Image (cartoon, rainbow, N blue to C red):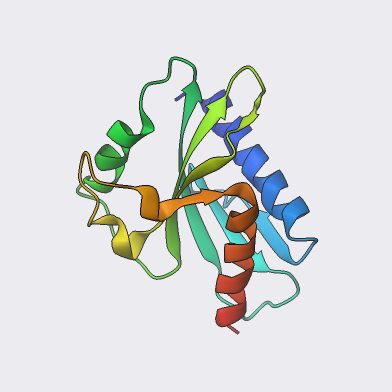
Length: 141
């Protein structure tokens, strides 16, 4: 994936979280990490953050996202952590937007995924994604 496409996907996710949460969440890119976004509850400086590691593929012609998932999770440097989530998205090049659904996988469950595994358990709509993030962060208070 090109850096421009990665940045476009990250920006769309930032907009989705910022606008969809009604200002209740803050999302930012840590300077030292590539492909990662951090999400925190606004105004609560002592709460834990959620970290989103993002893998996106452009449609049409970008291949199957399912084939790339195993590459990311199967790496030697993979480390499951509480609060770390993988976000696998398709980016529609014609509409210049994220597709309506994507996979949102907690890293603690990611090792269970193998090539050809059923990923429907982790499929989430844009609307449900933001609501889930709010719920997860409220649990950490």
